[in-house]
Image (cartoon, rainbow, N blue to C red; front, side, top):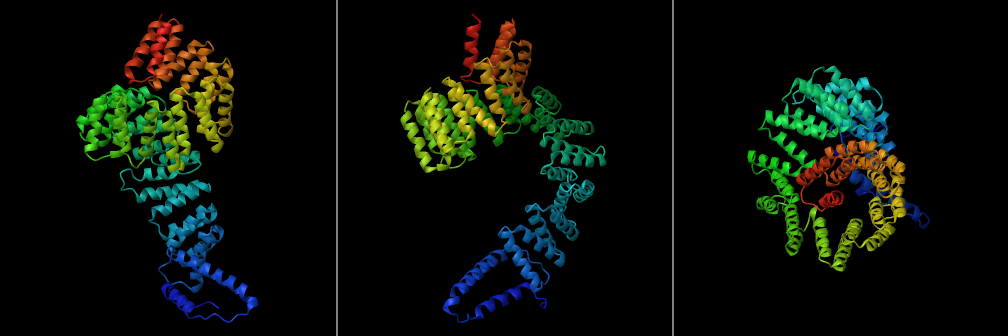
Length: 591
């Protein structure tokens, strides 16, 4: 017989009173164990009910006792991961109570349980009960996409736009953000395109499409959409910046810089253009030019934390120690980014050769993301001073204090030993670490590099191929193995195949483009080599790439062109030991 309708608080109080008033019956010894087990089960159930009551969704309307029981049971089932039971009960309650919060709970639990059919039904009810709730409608759109009902998804996307028409972008970016979370990227992009087609020549719609396409790495679609936006609104700052992002994603770094230069000439006071331009110059390795731009920004908009930090950082990279220090101290005196600034002030002191002062700076960092970095620098300085034993003792001490850092510190220990050219001990350190972390790709990669330096090419290749067995699309490892085979052996065809696979995965990675040029050079394909190496240098002004391109030009009889490439690289990059590659190469070739 169904009990009379009763509100939640009254029913709960009656339950509690009944529990307090009840007296356990007398039991015989033979039934004691069974009764004890039942009591323990009841106690555990009460604990579960107590925990779930605080988070349970309780409708405002009165519940029957049966509904309350189902609600508590649903919460317990959800907590105990009996999701099928929870979905069934929440869905039943949502239908019987017509409560939007229960419909929401049913929807979310069903999504978590990957029960799309139940989730769709619950989400439809949620939208019906709370039609102005954007979260409900966005979940329903996602479920329509997953169940293949594209037309229904489109109609609800239109409703999202209607409810957000007062937003600056008309709600299109909300839709793009929703679609970016879908696993089927192609379906998401096609759906966004269909929505844009419904809103012909709408710059907000095209802008959102470009953002979604770029996020999904559909760069050509992103480029086409943003070009259409700029035809409609050529001076719209967000669209100009998006165009720059798209050009960068396409690997057209020089085009990005040229585009931004034109925009800066037209609108010299738009700080966002200069910021993007300065960052792009830095990413492209053109540090002196980047520094100049950041200083111009500082004059236009003084005391901007990000800009001051960038100037200090780039000045440090270029070896302008005093200039860098003045900007970092400016930040420190303002009380911003204290530990981060202390870290870079420590790096400054290292550049000056003031190891004691550098250690003092690093020791002042007691917490945060730079704490371990600072401890590592102390270890590196200690090793550089010749006290390798103490440096390794420091590593072991930190390992004991922070076991979670064991892997990273083992890698640091190997690097410290490599710096002093103790390759055999480094090799042993990696061997020991691999006993604890046998499949770690970073350790295998590090050991392979030491194996290369000690002419253990068999171990180097074995380690790199072990990584590729588990991660066949690891472009860095494909490139490393391919480059080594091209540089150290005559297995050029294998090298070409490996580098080609890496380049297919990352067509705009200058390291890989450089490797492709180098393998063609080793194969005697000088024209192909020059093509790839020139592109690599266009992607990134790098000393090693410049050395490679210069060498190919030199042996091709283009000595003047080679000297120009080397001179530009020496001028545009900061002080680095890698520059010795060029100076040594010039001495060897230009005899």
